[in-house]
Length: 119
Image 1 (cartoon, one colour):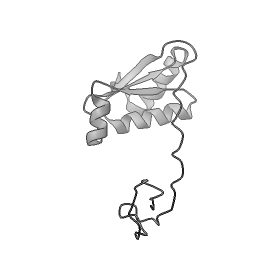
Image 2: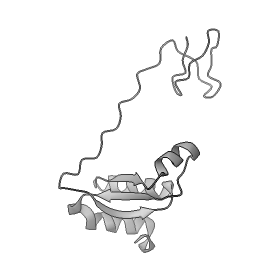
Image 3: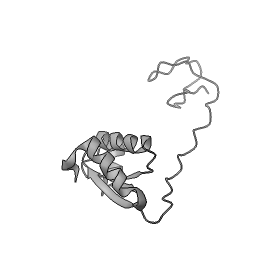
Image 4: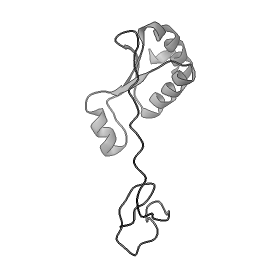
């Protein structure tokens, strides 16, 4: 059975293109990419840096922290993970955590990205 190389959809014989992705189908899909490894907080329990209300703000902050070589992780509050899968966003908020030794530097980055009202 042919597969879409992007969305990994399976199609009946006779189909040549994915209706969703408009890509040519292949006989076998490539193996899925390996799961991202969890961020290792090398100096103890991570500290809460801030909470943001929108996924785009969390993504902007995570990218800014990454460019400053500050490991960070985000965790959706409450049932936010489920809501995000179902609706594409969460209304519960997202918490951003960083290593304790980099908390002050991460806070400065967060103020630059989100403004002082984030705290």
